[in-house]
Image (cartoon, rainbow, N blue to C red; front, side, top):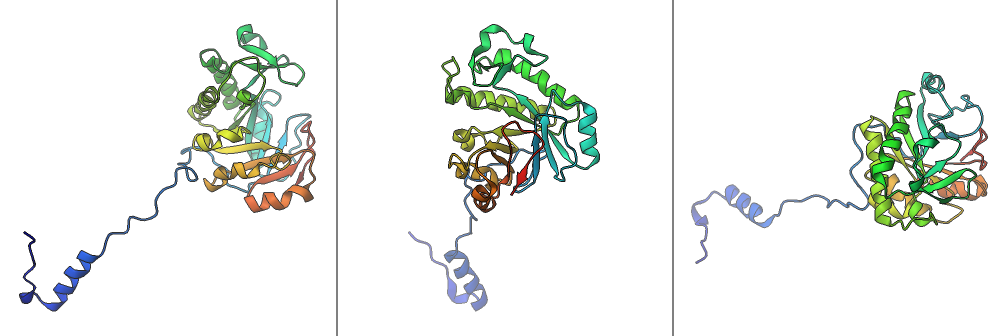
Length: 274
């Protein structure tokens, strides 16, 4: 039996309120979209889209470039170099190779032969077996400790897409996800931000774990759209082209909100920003 309100004795104003309440549903607000707006990494420096940067991995660092962010080699630069950049109110990113062994690094002897794979095309480098997190985690932790001890604000681990290359190991996408998330955790545990280097195919799964992205030649390869999840999450995409001129890629970079510049492959001090 349906119960009816005895409305005859109710005041007109009260009746109208009751009718309005019965006929209106509460507004639930916009539905979240986990694919495009992942929760940002909290408690760490997170550069915003469009932040200008300098990337120099060879030669003595030229500190005169007027940009708020520098990305420099963690092994080749000491705490004093980082301090000089901080004195100019700049954030400093520590470049380390996380996907390949390098025969010219001071810690080269600490990597067991079992985790060394095929050469990756760069002299003195061999892919690492990223499945062996038990071996590589403490080695990478020491490298990240070095970055922290020198005062770096963030880490750029390189070669984070080994599973898409001929490494000498049967690596899978799941192996890469686990390894990359391990690296992000190491950085955050040490109070540093961390960038996702390339690995475009896994951006949807990893954008929530990383504080910014670093990309090479997305315009040359016609794949810059894959980086938009970082922009939508309010995180910078530090982007470099080597072959294309700024006239070719800067209009797209500006449209997407990338932090873009042209560099030479040797990554010396020269740059031509958008």
